[in-house]
Image 1 (cartoon, one colour):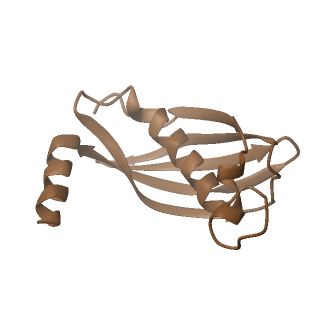
Image 2 (tube, helix red, strand yellow):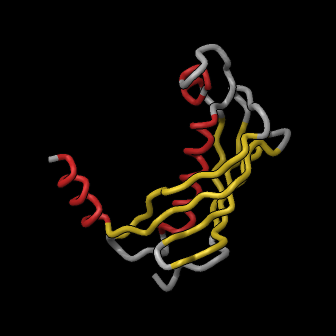
Length: 130
């Protein structure tokens, strides 16, 4: 875990599709990028920032998201999601997250992830399901 250092970062760029629409989540009629879809994109950026630096058999899981959705983004517009590791506290990682569409900043906030041993984590899930 020594390779996990403040400053690690990742950027994901994508085009908003119908499946990402708010109409598919809550309100049923507004065709803009949904908050859940954008949060998912930012979580992926945070995970990608550290994945290559983790030992084999380890990954991260999201444990907290605190964001402000600042502006709506229409279907078909490009979006850039960015995550930067700003704090390492043992296995807890804190990321500054931001997203932009082609016109403006659309989301900002913090995201926490926790480093897990995948095999042990999955065993806990299997035991819980019994």
